[in-house]
Image (cartoon, rainbow, N blue to C red; front, side):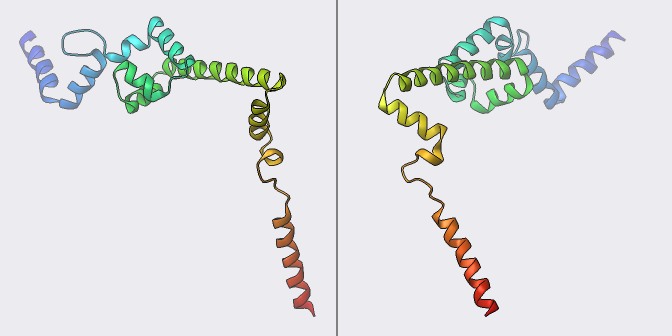
Length: 152
């Protein structure tokens, strides 16, 4: 009986390539350790990911730092909410810090910061060529004129 079970297990691992690939992905190289992602779903790995995200690294840069492709990192983010959440929170934190720094510069009188802030916060009012609405008004007037001409 033991010989039969051993044969079935060996047959499953050796003959079923898809199952073997899943096993290697889940446990790393044959015979040991977790796959590469294992380290990154533990506390120390998540702390590193958060720090890199806070430092402003892109997903491409983070993937390279880990030693994987961007598509693999995307897959990990989809499969492991801890990785996804950690990267989101790290990036959000640095975005808020940059927003606050920009606002402080704008409020202190830095003209460039003021312009940048206003163009991004109120683009309709502060873009280079303000939207006067004249084009919409002309289109509406043309429509009214056509209706009037049709009634005459």
